[in-house]
Length: 344
Image (cartoon, helix red, strand yellow):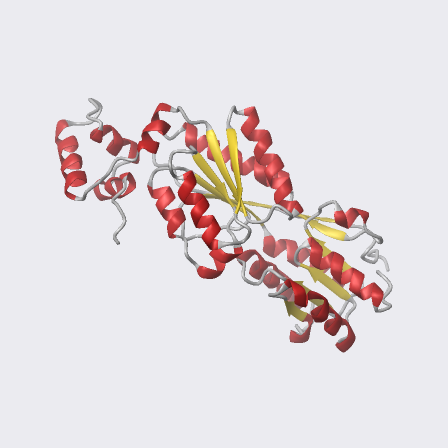
C-alpha cells in the first residue's frame, strides 16, 4: 500500500520549507493567496491527511523525547543514556526510554507507538536487526512527519537526520598501533559486531594499522562471532591453533572473556598476550589484570545528541531548512595492565 503524502513531500514538491506548507494549510496570512491555493489543491489531490501530532509540536505542548537503544546491558549505552538524561532534565524535557533488544520488529513497533503524538523528537541507536536487514522505512516515515530525529553511534546514511558518532576507524587503528609499538606482531581481532557498520569500521582500522606497520593480515586471526554460545570455542581454537601475542576485542565482553579464556590456557597477561577492548566501562577496571580500553566517551555522545535534538525541536516552527550534520567524536586509549609498556 502506498504511504500517505506528508508535509515534507509537499514541501519538496514546491521547494519550500515544511513550516511554509503547514502555514498554507492552516490558512496563515504569512503565505500568499496564490501559493496557499496551490499547496491546498496539491494536498487535496494527493489525499494528504493532517497529523494531529504535528499540531501539538507547533503548539509546543509536548516536551518529551523518545530514546531507543539496542541493549541496556551494554555499559556504553548506559553511559549514553546518562548524558541524554542530564541534558534533557536541564532543558525541561521528559524522556520515554525503550529497548529494541537488537530486534528490527521491536524497533519498528516502538517507533510506531512513539509516532502517535507521544514525543516531540527521537534519539535512536539502530538495532542489529535493522542494520542487518537494511530496512529503514519506519524511520523515514517518522522523519517525513516532521518529527526531528538524531541518531547516535549506530547510524545509517539512508535516513536524512542529524547524527552523532565516534571515530570507530581511528579508535581501532590507534589501539592496534599501540599493540604493535609494544612489540606485538601476531594480533588477533575478535568481532561480535560484523553485522554492524561500527564493527566494519573497526575492522578496517585494524587492517590499516597492520598494513602501515608492514604486518600482513592473517585471516586465521580475524574472528567474527555471530552466535554468543560459540564465543568460547572460537577463542579457544584461535589461541590453541595460532601464534597470538595481541588481541583487540571490539566490545568490552570480547576483551574480558578472551582474557579469561587465555589465562585458563596458561597465558600470562601481558607477558605472553596483550589485550585491548572497546568501551571503557566498569568491568575492564576491576578485572585482574585491568584491561586497556578504547574509551568512546558515551556520556558526552548522549549530551551532544540531546543538544542537537532539542535545538531541532525548538527551531521546528522557524521557516528554515538547516542542513543535517554528522558530528564525529574522537576516542581515547586508556592504558592499563593488560598491555606491555611502550619501552618494553
